[in-house]
Image (cartoon, rainbow, N blue to C red; front, side):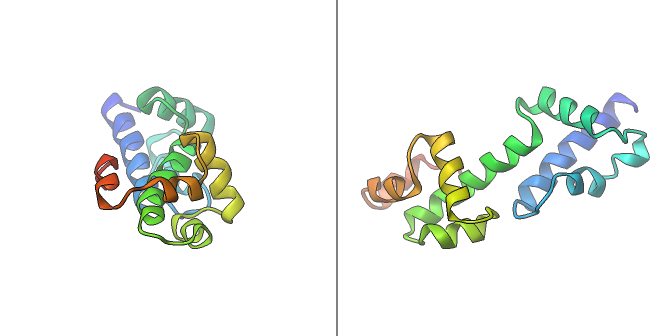
Length: 126
């Protein structure tokens, strides 16, 4: 695989994860962007290359992206069970476990810690 094609495949895979955060698996990200036609059929290679390029494995990136998407929904007052469904988590405990691991607080604590609209200023733009 030429270097430019390889970088394109990884970037396109990340874009697929960003736009399809509710997708159940990561194999679709690599298949959708055509990794196999480039001659890279080994998922282990793609995962390692993704990790080198973006600093984390694709699954960790996907979970982090889902947590990022959950933050503004929680601040808007959406119940955690609905946020979990809207952002692609299996259920509310799945959201809580990853939210707490990544941000150090539960979704409920996060939602209640907001002091109104100005608290949203620290959120990344989507």
